[in-house]
Image (cartoon, rainbow, N blue to C red; front, top):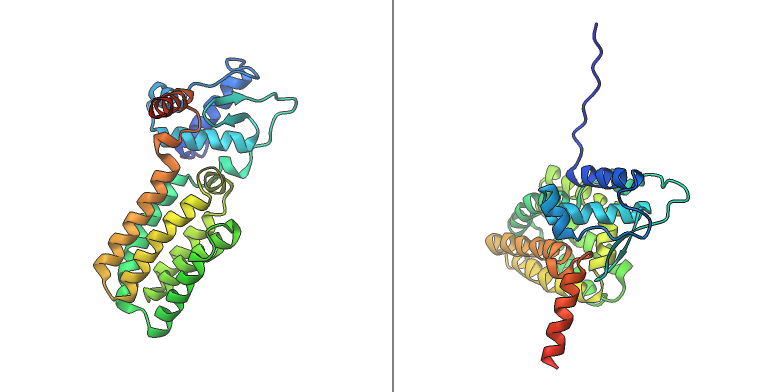
Amino acid sequence: MVTLPTLKVKRLYRQISELLIQKIKDGEFKAGDSLPSERDLAQQLGVSRSSVREALIALEIAGWVDIRTGHGVFVCDQDAEPNPPEALTSVGVEELLTARALIECETARLAAKNATPAQLAELAQLMDDLECEPENTSKFLTLDKHLHVLIGEMADNSVLSEFIEILWTKRHDQLFAQFENRFGGKVLSIAMNHDHRKICDAIINRDPAAAKKAMQAHIAHVHKSFFMESASIASPKIAAEKARRSEKEV
């Protein structure tokens, strides 16, 4: 009887990561070399820029490359081969945000319909606490998770609530955490709280349509902050263009 190997479908960012690792091992990219920009890699590989960004950040966590914002991505010296970290097996950031958009928007709609008065009071207090902590990243992230999990509970659907818990557990994966480190901070926290306030107000006002719309906008804003081209991690051309524009404005 012929034995066939088990086939595994790999996430796209992992395929890109492994391709670049192989090229480094083969000497096509040597220590100190700059990799092509996100845009160029995406065009050459026929993939999205977001998948390339996920791959590059995963390689940074693994120790294969050094990302210098505004300057490029450079191959690191490899005295000893890095061990593949959790990041190379993590759920992709974009697929996690897609799942959140599918599940949390409907959850917010149901929360506006089904929340108890006690839950609404807890939500209002939690929102006030969040607005006091934009500079305390650790506490902000804890409260942020608490708010979204509470909204899941308010939907009064145990399956949806369980899915919310799973999604927010995945947020602690190395890859997602590194995106938050690179593209988060006080400015993003304040912007996210603006979204949170709209979500909470809609739920408290028992407006399901507005709650769903506010959650959709919130997750879209998170996606934009992580993947917009102006925040490119590997595009010296964009950095140079921004510098030239600034000089003209002075």
